[in-house]
Image 1 (tube, helix red, strand yellow):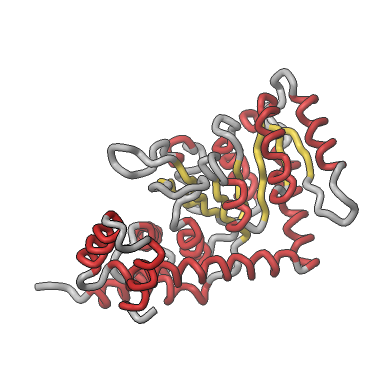
Image 2 (tube, helix red, strand yellow):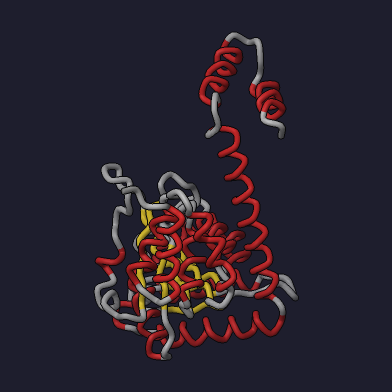
Length: 320
């Protein structure tokens, strides 16, 4: 006997709202894999969102972001807060899943009932984040997590992408990051709330901190100036100070209207993505779409059409 998908979703929602962690994991899987009914799930839980503080961490591979996340989780838990971690990893060429698996690396916190860690694969998305990061964050928010920590792969345009997803952005660097800082300095200044030189026990750390402070000092009066800190996440040096600064900046954003502005921009971006997805589905998942695509490819090859005339005809055919 076949089950009714709507009944399955209803039962899953009930378990989710009752705080069952297995249900949380299943809802995330539905959303991440775009299984049938995933948008209905998101629609039903969306009114429960908007309470979690979203903190993004980005920076080059090897900067110690995962260790830093683990320490921040411990500090947040000591404050009695529940934590959702989204660790975005490169995609495995074999399984299509997350390659590094941060749930294994963050062994000290993964068994804590107040912590939920989800490794996500980029699955071809550019910019260091998975395509469904925003919606997985929405699920964790709706589940009642107080804080969301979003860690990027640390490649491409991840700095900009994470700034669009988070309330606060932490850029994690190491003393050896000097060349990349020079390349990215404009972007770093635009998106970073906190610049952290991790592994500060390494040679060159004071020089790196001074270079970042000089960059911050060049900002024009009135421009937002990121805070520069140094840490050694492996032994917790500087981590309580970082956590205190994260909380201070969040309170400041809340009181000045900056948080509302960031969240409004995030809603706008999310809405555009949802609309784009629906248009894509309308165009390419309907009857005859593959045949129509192949027909226009042949016409373009034969120089009877260009991609632009073909686009107009496809859109007109679909009533768009």
